[in-house]
Image (cartoon, rainbow, N blue to C red; front, side, top):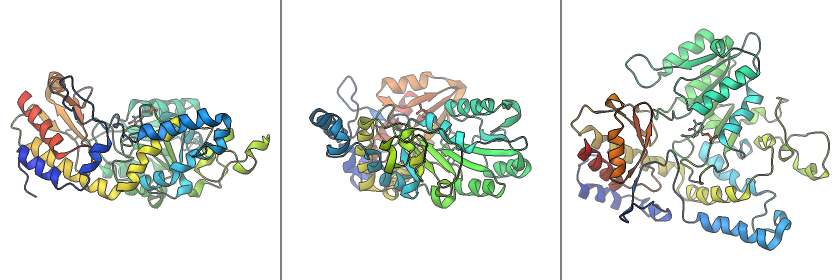
Length: 416
Ligand SMILES: *Cc1c(COP(=O)(O)O)cnc(C)c1O
């Protein structure tokens, strides 16, 4: 398609967008002057779906009406409530229903998964991660290494791009796996890197890892609800994600985890809690833990229903739209954004997101000059700044429009 940098053209693209009505399903934050913000920050906190209120209110009402009996008599009984999210989650990450569960928060799940899946031995103890992984992930893997009594320096392999490049080449990962594979216990990557927006080649990396007997896990914080995933078919061992970024479930909402079915009957050690115990006799309060033979077996506590209600509200929209349509629109939005960014005549910005991407575009600002970001913020854009020098913008296909993208371009061009 030939794009044009005119408002009229962007409105035309909106007119032809079959998902355009979904924008009305969300509350778009307003500026002081009453106009809508250009909200491009769904990679950090997704917007609130208007239907969220009624989903949460239902549970508040049932709590008021039934008290503890709501576990069985609420319209959506709380006892199995997390199961109401299972099918939608499985579609989002590409798995069997038995392989996913909504529980805890992201970093907690990462630790729980590593308790089971990072089992270092004298000969095999290393972990591979991106050097610029989200800090929480680095803290988590480093603390696991130390917890097992190994040295971070000798055990953590941090992937970096080649000099002068911004993203990590699959061939470089392959080379490390080939060279050090027998010493590597775990590959743990952000499926979509939070900083550059690079999507890793899940399938190839998993295959290479499995061939060397390495456990392969992904943090899908920036992937779930953003790109098409096939965790089961790719043979990924485990994955974790949060639900408040692309999955629009509200700040700090409950996260998710995937455990491949090949591990459901294993005797992997785990940190156990009563909610992971066999449902048939959980309430007989037996002393001996008997894990549910699915991802649910990794649950610890009974989950926060109000948070799960917000996720359900959001996932009901994903169910209506489906990942295929979302990804198709996402690609058009980012293509348009890149077209516009590329015609701004300047050497002050550089796009560092590679072609393998979801909807996030990372713009590196020359000399880390944050003034540029502050000025576009003043003019109504909500994006985010990541030290040392990157503005991340994510046109999200569910609620962002082509005119949002155009308006962003216009403001950025003006400021530059
Ligand atoms: C957002 C994000 C987190 C945040 O962790 P919480 O436990 O949800 O606070 C962790 N890791 C990555 C890769 C993220 O993008």
